[in-house]
Image (cartoon, rainbow, N blue to C red; front, top):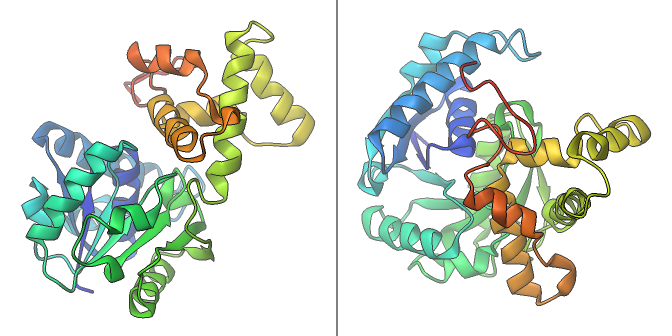
Length: 283
């Protein structure tokens, strides 16, 4: 593979693009907003400068950034050999992105769906290349996480699985095989945990810090569920829970009203400067 397209320059897209570039891949980072792309490059430069201090490898920011070009609009990924999509967990948005990519990209381009909940077979069905669509659930922060969930859809070919597995290995990722099921393994469990933790705050049982301290101190978790929500994005948590609730029609996935209110209020976590906690957005 010579060029990897990364669709979406939000938190996940930035992480994927950085991980690819720092492992020697040429990347075209695509978004619909030029300002978002400028901010993404600044974030990658900042992250690579801080990598050694944060326990990662020593990186040359200029070298990493030299491997990343940017483009506005999906046509920018037209010449990519493989595309990794990282847009919001909203089916209407994803469907439109894949319909556009399918028209713009060559017939041999592999589409990698970076989703936390949406079934891969559902995504593949809106394309003319279902055999070349596969799911990879990257964890945040992408460069620091050693493993991913690898999810073939119903029609995904063995060649697509192998090409994706090879790329992940080159990125330093262990691929854990998971069958195509809404939420896969990690988010069938994690989203329920975060949603229930939000209910505890919503009901006044405990504040966010107390909920998280129980998980840190009693269970040895490095982060509590609400800190994790802020890292992932409160809006992303809500959309993922809504996907699970719609897909399984099971009341245990009923989204907490507090998640809805926070999303409407723009309290999306670290990326907005405030979620369950408040952050210094200048650093």
